[in-house]
Length: 369
Image 1 (tube, rainbow, N blue to C red):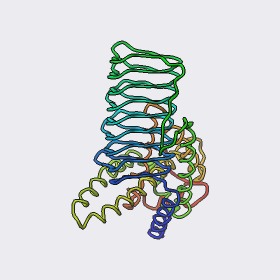
Image 2: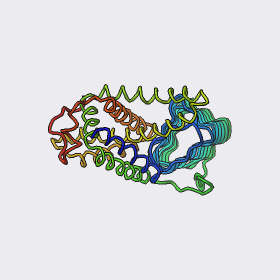
Image 3: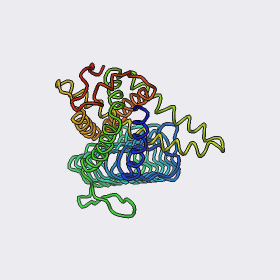
Image 4: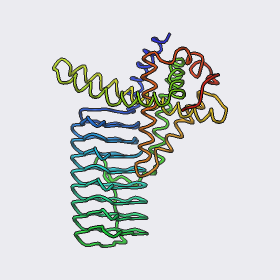
């Protein structure tokens, strides 16, 4: 029954991935995706650019080409690099790494960290904008609150319109600083002018897509889902550690396989399968969170845990300044690790008697450590 459920789970997940065009992606070629969470690992390179609509992006590695993202949150970590232009529309946008070209943005908040750099111009509008890094070209910003941090270095001029403008001591602007009350800014995506999208639009879409996958997981492989949840709630640290090892180790293995001519087709198949596994892991992670929260309220219901967990993670992932991206990543590691441990056979028969087989959830289990 277990292996049959896993085969069904993978088959239906692939079908759902094709139908919805969603889910986490680890890619080595040009990528276009709708919904879900895209994570570019530290040792990964996407060639040809990356396009994401109504999803979230966390970049630890390299995007060779342009980055285009609409909806959700976007985080370019310190180790992340975008060689082309970045056109970003979303709830929370953080650039802590390097963008070689122009950056155009619109959203709830925008943060250029001290280690972040923009090789071209910076233009956009957001409710809250803070610049602590370096911009080579001109900067044009519209915001409710604009902060120029003490470590900011703008090699061009600054044109802005803001309700509140705070320029801290130590900030450097080589060109003129001009306030323009008639300033209009926006971002283009696919050749069209994109308005500022409320943060909840992308989150709501991602919630519905993940809810659909979660329903598939619970209906097709209930006993296996119970084991994953049991591992996530009773062996939380172990699950998180296993998730980190899986997240780092599998891409490295795929790269090694791709080094051989015979291994290239296998590595491409592996990339697709790992993308599905990452998506499943993120949903399982939210499911574990929901289960834990219900247990705090002394309630147990697998469907309630799924909805609650996905809703909580969707809300927390919208926290600005990259904190939301960190939350999503931690939840992903938790679910991914529990998923990997369950595949290895850990968890015993606990899941067969738990969330996976009854509507009310497991009769036993300890809270998350």
